Image (tube, rainbow, N blue to C red; front, side, top):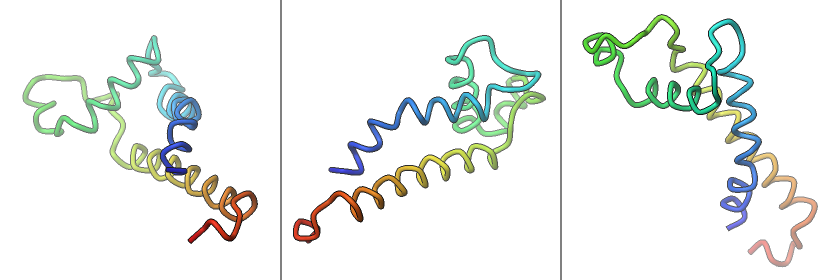
Length: 95
C-alpha cells in the first residue's frame, strides 16, 4: 500500500524527469503531450513496423534512455520507501 501511494504521489516528479530527459535539446517537441506520445510510440511500436509505415526514425531515441528513465523512477520510489520504512515507520508494525 505504501509503494502504491508513493507511485501516485511521485507522478509529477516522474513527468518532470521525463520532460528533462526526453524533451530537451534541438529536437524538442512543441508540447509535453507530444513527448509522451513519441516515447510511447518508441516503446510499443517495433522498429521494423516504423520503417515499413514510413514513420520518422531519425529523431527517435533508443531503448537505453527509456530503460534508464524507468530505472531512475524505480530507484526514486525505492529510496523513498526505504527512508519511510527506516525512519518513520514503527518497527513493531513492519511485520
